Image (cartoon, rainbow, N blue to C red; front, side, top):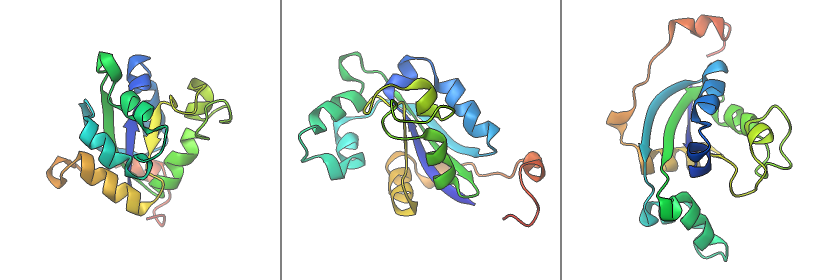
Length: 157
């Protein structure tokens, strides 16, 4: 089982798309093992987007992810499943919603590069780093649903 970090951004929260997005992950057979709603602080934004802090677009990104003047929160999650990182990223589609394929989350609901509803880790190292920014180990509730046998064959572990 692989774990990945997913962040439903302020535009997803504000547009009331959280349930639809979460349902897609659950329908795919991914387990939600940690979840919390929070306001991203400027400090947390700088840690999360460390590679972008010195770039000219960063101030706008920070304002967006921290919820701006209206302080819209985000929903942070840890998902677990087979090839979870690759599966979630494929489900999201291209970063720019205008270029994302229909049937993907961004292809169906986004028309922006920045306001693209969902962030997901791009690899095992970033998943581990991002999970640790938002959750401590005691906040994870791993489990094996009894429906697992209906999502994949017994030899797919």
